Length: 370
Image 1 (cartoon, rainbow, N blue to C red):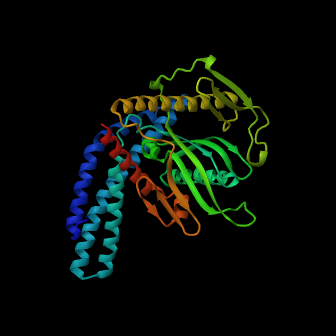
Image 2 (cartoon, rainbow, N blue to C red):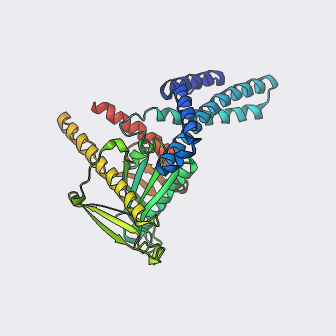
Image 3 (cartoon, one colour):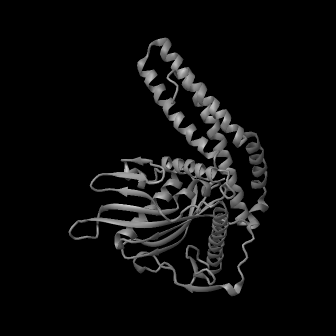
Protein backbone atom coordinates (compact mmCIF):
# COMPACT_ATOMS: atom_id res chain seq x y z
CA UNK A 1 0.00 0.00 0.00
CA UNK A 2 1.27 3.48 -0.85
CA UNK A 3 2.48 5.66 2.01
CA UNK A 4 -0.12 8.24 3.11
CA UNK A 5 2.42 11.01 3.71
CA UNK A 6 3.74 12.46 0.39
CA UNK A 7 7.28 12.85 1.74
CA UNK A 8 7.33 9.21 2.81
CA UNK A 9 5.95 8.08 -0.53
CA UNK A 10 8.53 10.12 -2.44
CA UNK A 11 11.29 8.57 -0.31
CA UNK A 12 9.83 5.12 -0.98
CA UNK A 13 9.79 5.74 -4.75
CA UNK A 14 13.35 7.11 -4.61
CA UNK A 15 14.49 3.91 -2.89
CA UNK A 16 12.67 1.83 -5.49
CA UNK A 17 14.45 3.79 -8.22
CA UNK A 18 17.76 3.04 -6.46
CA UNK A 19 16.92 -0.68 -6.59
CA UNK A 20 16.03 -0.45 -10.28
CA UNK A 21 19.30 1.30 -11.09
CA UNK A 22 21.23 -1.37 -9.19
CA UNK A 23 19.83 -3.87 -11.69
CA UNK A 24 19.97 -1.91 -14.95
CA UNK A 25 23.38 -0.29 -14.13
CA UNK A 26 23.20 3.23 -15.68
CA UNK A 27 27.01 3.60 -15.57
CA UNK A 28 27.43 0.54 -17.79
CA UNK A 29 24.70 1.88 -20.08
CA UNK A 30 26.53 5.23 -20.40
CA UNK A 31 29.79 3.44 -21.22
CA UNK A 32 28.10 1.34 -23.89
CA UNK A 33 26.33 4.40 -25.31
CA UNK A 34 29.64 6.26 -25.59
CA UNK A 35 31.16 3.33 -27.48
CA UNK A 36 28.16 3.14 -29.82
CA UNK A 37 28.38 6.89 -30.52
CA UNK A 38 31.99 6.38 -31.66
CA UNK A 39 30.88 3.54 -33.94
CA UNK A 40 27.99 5.61 -35.30
CA UNK A 41 30.39 8.47 -36.12
CA UNK A 42 32.47 6.18 -38.35
CA UNK A 43 31.33 6.67 -41.99
CA UNK A 44 32.47 3.14 -42.78
CA UNK A 45 29.79 1.71 -40.49
CA UNK A 46 27.12 2.34 -43.13
CA UNK A 47 28.84 0.02 -45.58
CA UNK A 48 27.08 -2.69 -43.56
CA UNK A 49 23.48 -1.45 -43.42
CA UNK A 50 22.26 -4.18 -41.07
CA UNK A 51 25.06 -3.54 -38.58
CA UNK A 52 24.55 0.23 -38.80
CA UNK A 53 20.85 -0.09 -38.06
CA UNK A 54 21.58 -2.40 -35.13
CA UNK A 55 24.05 0.13 -33.68
CA UNK A 56 21.73 3.12 -34.09
CA UNK A 57 18.72 1.26 -32.64
CA UNK A 58 20.72 0.15 -29.60
CA UNK A 59 22.12 3.65 -29.11
CA UNK A 60 18.66 5.20 -29.36
CA UNK A 61 17.35 2.71 -26.81
CA UNK A 62 20.16 3.38 -24.31
CA UNK A 63 19.83 7.16 -24.65
CA UNK A 64 16.08 6.90 -24.15
CA UNK A 65 16.42 4.72 -21.04
CA UNK A 66 19.06 6.98 -19.50
CA UNK A 67 16.94 10.05 -20.19
CA UNK A 68 13.98 8.25 -18.62
CA UNK A 69 15.91 7.52 -15.41
CA UNK A 70 17.22 11.08 -15.20
CA UNK A 71 13.73 12.46 -15.81
CA UNK A 72 12.20 10.32 -13.05
CA UNK A 73 14.86 11.50 -10.59
CA UNK A 74 14.26 15.13 -11.47
CA UNK A 75 10.48 14.81 -11.34
CA UNK A 76 10.64 13.21 -7.89
CA UNK A 77 12.70 16.15 -6.66
CA UNK A 78 10.36 18.67 -8.30
CA UNK A 79 7.30 16.97 -6.79
CA UNK A 80 8.85 17.07 -3.32
CA UNK A 81 9.43 20.83 -3.72
CA UNK A 82 5.90 21.36 -5.03
CA UNK A 83 4.41 19.65 -1.95
CA UNK A 84 6.56 21.79 0.34
CA UNK A 85 5.51 25.02 -1.41
CA UNK A 86 1.86 23.99 -1.38
CA UNK A 87 2.01 23.33 2.36
CA UNK A 88 3.88 26.56 3.10
CA UNK A 89 1.39 28.66 1.11
CA UNK A 90 -1.69 26.58 1.96
CA UNK A 91 -2.33 26.22 -1.78
CA UNK A 92 -4.77 23.35 -2.30
CA UNK A 93 -4.65 23.54 -6.10
CA UNK A 94 -0.86 23.17 -6.05
CA UNK A 95 -1.18 20.24 -3.64
CA UNK A 96 -3.73 18.59 -5.93
CA UNK A 97 -1.34 19.03 -8.87
CA UNK A 98 1.51 17.53 -6.86
CA UNK A 99 -0.69 14.59 -5.83
CA UNK A 100 -1.49 13.87 -9.50
CA UNK A 101 2.20 14.10 -10.41
CA UNK A 102 3.08 11.68 -7.62
CA UNK A 103 0.47 9.15 -8.76
CA UNK A 104 1.86 9.30 -12.30
CA UNK A 105 5.42 8.88 -11.02
CA UNK A 106 4.42 5.80 -9.01
CA UNK A 107 2.85 4.26 -12.12
CA UNK A 108 5.92 4.94 -14.28
CA UNK A 109 8.39 3.68 -11.68
CA UNK A 110 6.30 0.54 -11.12
CA UNK A 111 6.34 -0.07 -14.90
CA UNK A 112 10.11 0.44 -14.98
CA UNK A 113 10.49 -2.01 -12.10
CA UNK A 114 8.75 -4.67 -14.19
CA UNK A 115 11.53 -4.34 -16.77
CA UNK A 116 14.05 -5.63 -14.21
CA UNK A 117 12.21 -8.98 -14.40
CA UNK A 118 13.19 -9.44 -18.06
CA UNK A 119 16.24 -11.64 -17.56
CA UNK A 120 15.29 -14.70 -19.63
CA UNK A 121 17.65 -16.15 -22.23
CA UNK A 122 16.06 -14.28 -25.13
CA UNK A 123 14.25 -11.48 -23.32
CA UNK A 124 16.62 -8.79 -24.58
CA UNK A 125 15.91 -9.64 -28.23
CA UNK A 126 13.75 -7.87 -30.75
CA UNK A 127 10.36 -9.51 -31.33
CA UNK A 128 8.82 -11.16 -34.36
CA UNK A 129 5.01 -11.27 -34.21
CA UNK A 130 2.65 -13.33 -36.38
CA UNK A 131 -1.12 -12.89 -36.23
CA UNK A 132 -3.55 -15.35 -37.84
CA UNK A 133 -7.30 -14.98 -38.12
CA UNK A 134 -9.08 -18.02 -36.71
CA UNK A 135 -12.77 -18.91 -36.21
CA UNK A 136 -15.23 -16.16 -37.09
CA UNK A 137 -14.97 -15.65 -40.83
CA UNK A 138 -14.93 -12.02 -41.97
CA UNK A 139 -15.07 -10.77 -38.40
CA UNK A 140 -11.95 -12.79 -37.51
CA UNK A 141 -10.06 -11.25 -40.45
CA UNK A 142 -11.15 -7.80 -39.32
CA UNK A 143 -10.11 -8.61 -35.74
CA UNK A 144 -6.68 -9.77 -36.90
CA UNK A 145 -6.26 -6.38 -38.56
CA UNK A 146 -7.34 -4.68 -35.32
CA UNK A 147 -4.67 -6.59 -33.40
CA UNK A 148 -1.95 -5.71 -35.88
CA UNK A 149 -2.87 -2.03 -35.57
CA UNK A 150 -2.94 -2.35 -31.75
CA UNK A 151 0.63 -3.63 -31.59
CA UNK A 152 1.94 -1.17 -34.19
CA UNK A 153 0.30 1.71 -32.30
CA UNK A 154 1.84 0.41 -29.07
CA UNK A 155 5.28 0.39 -30.72
CA UNK A 156 4.68 3.88 -32.09
CA UNK A 157 3.71 5.18 -28.63
CA UNK A 158 7.03 3.92 -27.28
CA UNK A 159 8.98 5.19 -30.31
CA UNK A 160 9.97 1.64 -31.23
CA UNK A 161 10.73 0.86 -34.85
CA UNK A 162 8.46 -1.74 -36.48
CA UNK A 163 8.64 -3.41 -39.88
CA UNK A 164 5.86 -5.38 -41.56
CA UNK A 165 7.31 -8.32 -43.50
CA UNK A 166 4.19 -9.88 -44.93
CA UNK A 167 0.41 -9.46 -45.00
CA UNK A 168 -2.02 -11.97 -46.48
CA UNK A 169 -5.31 -10.16 -47.06
CA UNK A 170 -8.76 -11.70 -46.98
CA UNK A 171 -12.10 -10.32 -48.10
CA UNK A 172 -12.66 -8.33 -44.92
CA UNK A 173 -9.23 -7.87 -43.39
CA UNK A 174 -6.12 -9.90 -42.70
CA UNK A 175 -5.75 -13.66 -42.91
CA UNK A 176 -2.23 -13.47 -41.52
CA UNK A 177 0.55 -10.97 -40.97
CA UNK A 178 4.14 -11.03 -39.76
CA UNK A 179 6.00 -7.99 -38.45
CA UNK A 180 8.98 -7.17 -36.26
CA UNK A 181 9.22 -4.80 -33.30
CA UNK A 182 12.82 -3.63 -33.46
CA UNK A 183 13.66 -2.58 -29.94
CA UNK A 184 15.80 -4.18 -27.22
CA UNK A 185 13.73 -6.32 -24.86
CA UNK A 186 10.76 -6.31 -27.24
CA UNK A 187 10.54 -10.10 -27.05
CA UNK A 188 10.70 -10.22 -23.27
CA UNK A 189 8.11 -7.45 -23.11
CA UNK A 190 5.66 -8.94 -25.60
CA UNK A 191 6.05 -12.70 -25.21
CA UNK A 192 3.07 -12.87 -22.84
CA UNK A 193 0.86 -11.73 -25.73
CA UNK A 194 1.20 -15.16 -27.34
CA UNK A 195 -2.04 -17.11 -27.48
CA UNK A 196 -5.63 -16.82 -28.67
CA UNK A 197 -7.42 -13.47 -28.46
CA UNK A 198 -11.26 -13.37 -28.50
CA UNK A 199 -13.47 -10.52 -29.72
CA UNK A 200 -17.21 -10.08 -29.07
CA UNK A 201 -19.07 -7.29 -30.90
CA UNK A 202 -21.88 -6.49 -33.31
CA UNK A 203 -20.76 -7.81 -36.66
CA UNK A 204 -20.16 -5.28 -39.43
CA UNK A 205 -20.68 -8.11 -41.89
CA UNK A 206 -24.06 -9.37 -40.65
CA UNK A 207 -27.05 -7.73 -42.34
CA UNK A 208 -29.13 -8.45 -39.23
CA UNK A 209 -26.62 -6.76 -36.92
CA UNK A 210 -26.17 -9.78 -34.67
CA UNK A 211 -23.45 -10.21 -32.09
CA UNK A 212 -20.46 -12.17 -33.36
CA UNK A 213 -17.59 -13.87 -31.57
CA UNK A 214 -14.31 -14.14 -33.46
CA UNK A 215 -10.80 -15.32 -32.67
CA UNK A 216 -7.24 -14.51 -33.71
CA UNK A 217 -3.98 -16.21 -32.78
CA UNK A 218 -0.84 -14.28 -31.83
CA UNK A 219 2.61 -15.87 -32.02
CA UNK A 220 5.66 -14.07 -30.56
CA UNK A 221 9.23 -15.27 -31.12
CA UNK A 222 12.66 -13.68 -30.57
CA UNK A 223 14.57 -12.42 -33.60
CA UNK A 224 17.59 -14.58 -34.35
CA UNK A 225 21.15 -13.33 -33.99
CA UNK A 226 24.34 -14.54 -35.66
CA UNK A 227 25.31 -16.50 -32.54
CA UNK A 228 22.16 -18.67 -32.66
CA UNK A 229 23.48 -21.15 -35.26
CA UNK A 230 20.15 -22.21 -36.74
CA UNK A 231 21.22 -24.50 -39.56
CA UNK A 232 18.72 -24.95 -42.42
CA UNK A 233 20.00 -27.28 -45.18
CA UNK A 234 18.93 -26.31 -48.69
CA UNK A 235 17.25 -29.68 -49.24
CA UNK A 236 14.91 -29.01 -46.29
CA UNK A 237 13.27 -25.94 -47.83
CA UNK A 238 11.14 -25.14 -50.86
CA UNK A 239 11.30 -21.58 -52.18
CA UNK A 240 8.42 -20.16 -54.25
CA UNK A 241 8.24 -16.69 -55.76
CA UNK A 242 5.08 -14.77 -56.52
CA UNK A 243 3.85 -11.27 -57.28
CA UNK A 244 3.29 -8.96 -54.31
CA UNK A 245 -0.26 -7.75 -53.82
CA UNK A 246 -2.20 -5.41 -51.60
CA UNK A 247 -5.76 -5.31 -50.26
CA UNK A 248 -8.40 -6.56 -52.66
CA UNK A 249 -5.79 -8.08 -54.95
CA UNK A 250 -4.54 -4.70 -56.19
CA UNK A 251 -1.04 -5.18 -57.57
CA UNK A 252 1.71 -3.24 -55.88
CA UNK A 253 4.58 -4.83 -57.77
CA UNK A 254 4.96 -5.78 -61.41
CA UNK A 255 7.63 -8.44 -60.83
CA UNK A 256 7.67 -11.78 -59.04
CA UNK A 257 9.68 -10.42 -56.09
CA UNK A 258 7.68 -11.84 -53.15
CA UNK A 259 9.11 -15.02 -51.63
CA UNK A 260 7.47 -17.92 -49.80
CA UNK A 261 9.64 -20.50 -48.02
CA UNK A 262 8.34 -23.86 -46.80
CA UNK A 263 10.38 -25.78 -44.24
CA UNK A 264 9.64 -29.35 -45.29
CA UNK A 265 10.43 -31.23 -42.04
CA UNK A 266 8.14 -29.06 -39.89
CA UNK A 267 5.66 -27.68 -42.43
CA UNK A 268 6.38 -24.10 -41.30
CA UNK A 269 5.61 -21.61 -44.08
CA UNK A 270 6.86 -18.02 -44.10
CA UNK A 271 6.72 -15.31 -46.72
CA UNK A 272 7.97 -11.78 -47.27
CA UNK A 273 6.86 -9.18 -49.80
CA UNK A 274 7.84 -5.83 -48.29
CA UNK A 275 11.05 -5.38 -50.30
CA UNK A 276 11.35 -4.60 -54.03
CA UNK A 277 14.09 -7.20 -54.52
CA UNK A 278 13.53 -10.95 -54.55
CA UNK A 279 16.95 -11.42 -52.93
CA UNK A 280 16.05 -9.06 -50.06
CA UNK A 281 12.68 -10.75 -49.57
CA UNK A 282 14.32 -14.17 -49.47
CA UNK A 283 16.83 -12.97 -46.85
CA UNK A 284 14.02 -11.54 -44.71
CA UNK A 285 11.93 -14.70 -45.08
CA UNK A 286 14.89 -16.87 -44.06
CA UNK A 287 15.38 -14.69 -40.97
CA UNK A 288 11.72 -15.20 -40.05
CA UNK A 289 12.03 -18.97 -40.59
CA UNK A 290 15.17 -19.11 -38.44
CA UNK A 291 13.35 -17.24 -35.66
CA UNK A 292 10.43 -19.66 -35.75
CA UNK A 293 12.74 -22.70 -35.74
CA UNK A 294 14.72 -21.22 -32.85
CA UNK A 295 11.54 -20.74 -30.84
CA UNK A 296 10.38 -24.25 -31.73
CA UNK A 297 13.67 -25.63 -30.41
CA UNK A 298 13.39 -23.52 -27.25
CA UNK A 299 9.85 -24.75 -26.59
CA UNK A 300 10.84 -28.37 -27.16
CA UNK A 301 13.67 -27.98 -24.64
CA UNK A 302 11.28 -26.32 -22.17
CA UNK A 303 8.77 -29.17 -22.60
CA UNK A 304 11.48 -31.74 -21.96
CA UNK A 305 12.45 -29.95 -18.75
CA UNK A 306 8.78 -29.66 -17.76
CA UNK A 307 8.32 -33.39 -18.32
CA UNK A 308 11.30 -34.10 -16.08
CA UNK A 309 9.79 -31.85 -13.39
CA UNK A 310 6.41 -33.52 -13.89
CA UNK A 311 4.46 -30.27 -14.18
CA UNK A 312 3.20 -30.78 -17.72
CA UNK A 313 4.75 -27.55 -19.01
CA UNK A 314 3.10 -24.28 -19.87
CA UNK A 315 0.12 -24.36 -22.21
CA UNK A 316 0.80 -21.88 -25.00
CA UNK A 317 -1.78 -21.09 -27.65
CA UNK A 318 -4.72 -21.07 -25.22
CA UNK A 319 -7.19 -18.23 -24.92
CA UNK A 320 -5.56 -15.35 -23.07
CA UNK A 321 -7.70 -12.23 -23.49
CA UNK A 322 -11.29 -11.24 -24.20
CA UNK A 323 -12.23 -8.00 -25.96
CA UNK A 324 -15.93 -7.19 -25.55
CA UNK A 325 -17.46 -4.23 -27.43
CA UNK A 326 -21.12 -5.24 -27.04
CA UNK A 327 -23.37 -5.16 -25.00
CA UNK A 328 -20.75 -3.34 -22.84
CA UNK A 329 -17.06 -2.49 -23.24
CA UNK A 330 -14.50 -4.57 -21.42
CA UNK A 331 -11.08 -6.10 -22.04
CA UNK A 332 -9.96 -8.79 -19.58
CA UNK A 333 -6.92 -11.04 -19.44
CA UNK A 334 -8.03 -14.49 -18.32
CA UNK A 335 -4.63 -15.33 -16.76
CA UNK A 336 -3.79 -12.21 -14.77
CA UNK A 337 -7.28 -10.82 -14.13
CA UNK A 338 -6.19 -7.41 -15.50
CA UNK A 339 -9.18 -5.64 -17.06
CA UNK A 340 -10.43 -2.26 -18.22
CA UNK A 341 -13.69 -0.83 -19.50
CA UNK A 342 -11.90 1.31 -22.10
CA UNK A 343 -11.73 -1.29 -24.85
CA UNK A 344 -11.22 1.24 -27.64
CA UNK A 345 -8.12 2.66 -25.94
CA UNK A 346 -6.68 -0.86 -25.68
CA UNK A 347 -7.27 -1.46 -29.38
CA UNK A 348 -5.50 1.87 -29.99
CA UNK A 349 -2.34 0.51 -28.38
CA UNK A 350 -2.78 1.27 -24.67
CA UNK A 351 -1.76 -2.20 -23.49
CA UNK A 352 1.07 -1.44 -21.05
CA UNK A 353 -0.96 -2.41 -17.96
CA UNK A 354 -1.76 -5.79 -19.55
CA UNK A 355 1.88 -6.31 -20.56
CA UNK A 356 3.19 -5.45 -17.08
CA UNK A 357 0.74 -7.89 -15.47
CA UNK A 358 1.79 -10.60 -17.95
CA UNK A 359 5.48 -10.14 -17.18
CA UNK A 360 4.84 -10.49 -13.44
CA UNK A 361 2.58 -13.51 -14.06
CA UNK A 362 5.13 -15.23 -16.29
CA UNK A 363 7.95 -14.58 -13.84
CA UNK A 364 5.92 -16.02 -10.94
CA UNK A 365 5.17 -19.12 -12.97
CA UNK A 366 8.82 -19.59 -13.95
CA UNK A 367 9.98 -19.16 -10.35
CA UNK A 368 7.45 -21.73 -9.15
CA UNK A 369 8.59 -24.16 -11.84
CA UNK A 370 12.20 -24.05 -10.73
